Amino acid sequence: MPTIPEQISSHLLIWAVALFIVKHLLADFLLQTSWMAQGKERPHGWAKPLLAHVGVHAAGTLLIASLMAPSLIWLALVDFVVHGAIDRCKTMIQQRHHFKVDQAAYWWLFGVDQTLHHLTHLLFAVWIAAAASAA
Image (tube, rainbow, N blue to C red; front, side):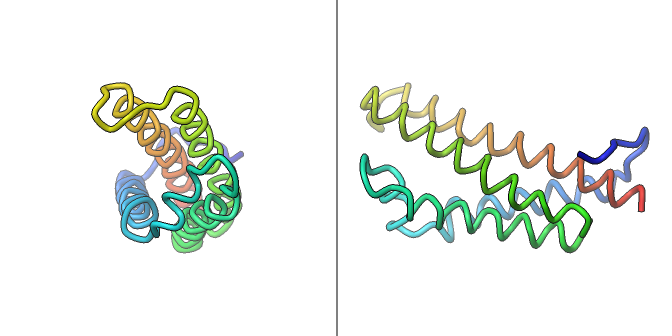
């Protein structure tokens, strides 16, 4: 785990956060196929669609880390694992409680899922900006 220096470049942090926001939009909404979205939520046969989806996320993180702090490309593997765990937990809760789109609980669960992804990306952005600032 990288050491966080007392001072981090604001520019690097802003760029890292912005890149992760764009990465998330692309991976979770624009590049996620219906096969991934529907497949990862099936009771059986969910692994391949989920792995493909988190692979897209990990590829984005790999690109960001490669550009900004190559020593942290391992964050792509962390993203793969963490994003997969968050998505799988969301699906399991959804399946257990049968939340529907017209229920508030469905949107609370969706909001928690997205917030966990954004908090993960914020942590990655801080690590990347800290590593790039120290270099």
